[in-house]
Amino acid sequence: MIPSEDFVVTDRGGIVENRHRVHAAVVDAEGRLLYALGNPTRLTLARSAAKPAQALAILETSGIERYGFDDADLALMCASHSGEERHIAQTRTMLAKIQADEADLRCGGHPSLSETVNRAWIRQDYTPTAVCSNCSGKHVGMIAGARAIGADADDYHLPDHPMQVIVKRTVAEICDLDLQDVEWGIDGCNLPTPAFPLDRLARLYAKLASAADRGEVQEGLSRRDAALARIFRAMARYPELVAGEGRYCTVLMRAFKGALIGKLGADASYAIGVRASEDTRRLGTDGALGISVKIEDGNIEILYAVVTEILDQLGIGSPELREQLATFHHPKRVNTMGVATGGVSFPFTLRGSKPDGEDSRPGASAR
Image (cartoon, rainbow, N blue to C red; front, top):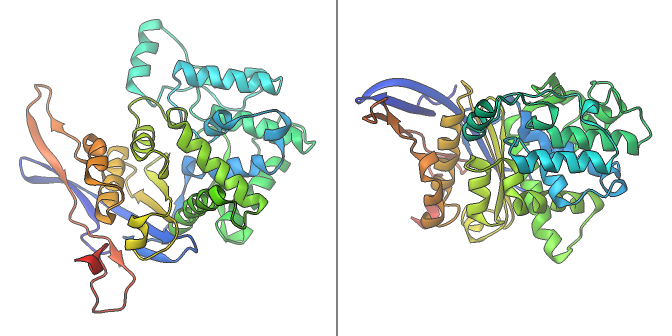
């Protein structure tokens, strides 16, 4: 049974208006569950939070090397971008590198994930096309990967295409699952999207952060570890390409300056990979951490608040650093006249995996 306190509460004048159920998993680099909320093994559609694993599959086809993609291109492959000018320009640059046209993309245009960009498009009477898709980088990467393995790229998006077969195998492997343990649907961008236990999403991001740690010293780095380290480095180096101005992923990664990466998935899933530090050692591991979160009702605003609260409860980063996320942590509830009408509260506390009778809250041993 899910503990009754594993909710976020929004109120209006002190009256409870909504409760948003939270699921979360915090794991170490070996996949050991350290802390949890709700059901940490809930079958969860990772949506765009799975993009680093999909990018890994593209890397392992040699498509990135063959077409001269750099780390900025790789960051866009992992992105859910806002359709800002730099994102569209980066997509067009990537298309040029593979000598493809926008018509070759099997995604469609849609309103921007940024209200600022949307307002600009409306003023310009601009109709977004495929290069404006928040997933455009991933789609260009899929075409490159398909061509690198000698497959026809016209139908690269179909579930049984050779490129997607590679993606499915790679996702299962990186999550330490058998192929049949990963379920697949179709994402909003028209590519297959995986579903697997929530803690396996955290495991993926712990592996990304762990590979980044080992990559700095080249300690026992396999070909796959090198690819994972490169994905982490690309996202951390180009946070503005992974999301966009004012967006949570970009603000988060800019604030932490390479200490972690974070990625949104549609309908309120999120994942973070945290590199080894004094903070992670205090939480019971000598290595990296992975964090995954799902809000049951798909509320993105609540998701960002919860992710920030979890970082706060874990003590990841200094209070001054986490303060840069304050507007996401405690979103204002105001009416059309700017009058404060309510707030958001977090009655939950992360539960640890220590034996019964011990205080298993984050940092309890230091209390």
